[in-house]
Length: 392
Image (cartoon, rainbow, N blue to C red; front, top):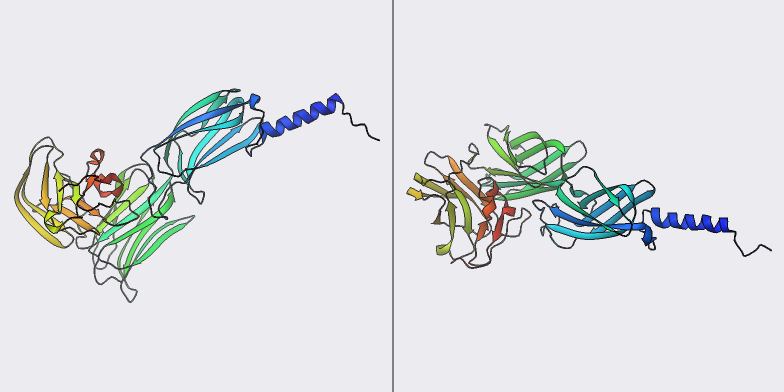
């Protein structure tokens, strides 16, 4: 018969093994030795928030993940579901073995596991004290994003449009049938992905009518503007690519005006009232300079219609309201000088969309956020909001 008593040495070994299991298991143990553990409290700010939009395919984040590494412990990994669209995430994580040089990684993911935000600090090392909470203030920056394409006045000789981004690891692509206005989104592109953008338009026989391609390194964090040349038959034209923080590359093409691409910016479109009786539809135009702006002949185009206003003067940092024939499902609005120079251009979408344009309720306008008063920033739907009060 074996004795039911265990020697002190065996008890000591068992105790050490059990303690090791609870302290060093990387699977969030249910009964850690709390007296030997500490906690971290994370206050994470998401800069230039990647908005969680209604379109399921658009780049958005669903989970915040915190990983802790260190000597004498296995990796701890916490995954918290994010149910709303926060700019700040606060959470506390407990049961972390005390010790120095504990490395903490913080990031967000979508439901497929793609990293959408990463910590702005490459390596974050902290000391975990027993029974104490260690605060961490983190800034999360975009790690993935989207390429948006907006096309207006699409030629009737086009049957189908192909929009493709090809990297060494993956290809993102969309094909759409021709419409007067087309909006395409390629989503969930990791920051730093190097590849080539291709845009091709073909006729019903499959012949290529328009084509453009350019190698880029997709940047989910900075704003810049690139110019891409079309190899078209029978002419060459230019397409602008605008990268907007965070994680959005916007391509806007007016196929009735392929030679003009830049926006001079003397005036900025800041308000659009499209969901109203025809007599009440308008845009507001802002003069951002410190001096009055006078334009001999201001040409306003809405899709293929044109309106000319003689001798327009807008005082310094003031607004002017202009009546226009806008449509609810979206229009390409272009302000031009008499010599055809584009002053500002906005291609808004007034219905549910993946490009983050807000929808305006009846007799309520969409307005450009005052921090985005810029001829580049007003091209992005995420910089506009639907006004809560009637404007008429």
